[in-house]
Length: 367
Image 1 (cartoon, rainbow, N blue to C red):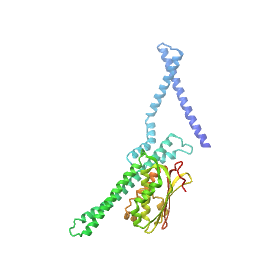
Image 2: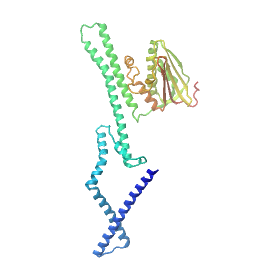
Image 3: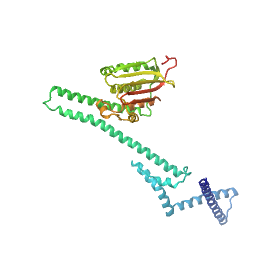
């Protein structure tokens, strides 16, 4: 409470000082004009005389303030106060976001948070912090992309060089060529996913919303991937009542394909994948994909939607993943204002539930 009183007194004193200074300037203007009228001799009307005194008084006020600010001692104090802020802005412009303006914050006591200098310093510090975080993400993204590209390029280069050996058998030659083909497909997929993720992160990306049968879409995707799950003798448990939603069908194709591929990839031979749709408690359509695969620990669950994140890097690399599939899934669901929930346990499998859209009025009830 005492600090507020002191702050009020300081502001009042500053305001009164300005008023007093203006009164002195107007008084000086009155004496100057009175002397001028006697010297001419000429005396204007009372209104014109007051108007001239008012203008001259403000002119004198501005001149005196300008002179004061040009005094070397005053100028050096101003520059010393503003120099760290100017230097901080220059550092940010040069890409160095590690700035320290804590000196200014220490100058303001509690209750002075609305001071203009405090607001400027706080916002510059916040801007530098956010730009630093963005730069770290950019560097990490470049590093991850470089790493993902370097591995298949090394394989392609190495096996292409090995193919120059004339002593290779036809079996060895076919094996090397198949590896080159596989790594080329992997590079192409990485490029495709990067372009897709960049497109999805565009703020102006339009959604082609339309009503369609979600159960038809899911069955079509499951059947399209039949060679993959039949090869591993996976049992597909499908529970899909009639469901009609409004969404971007092409984008949701990508969601269900990525989620189903992940389930097939990490489910062992003879496992089970369950795909079901139902209406959730908030009237949204929910799609649940549950598998009996290897599962994930809690630490992995916290990062699975990050770009290039792989819960088991060596296993995922062997299976051809690049860590972008779930990032794309999350972005598409966010664009549809939906939500995705993941539950998993090591050795017991993973359950992913997507809630998106609303069931069309008049469509069949989903159990």
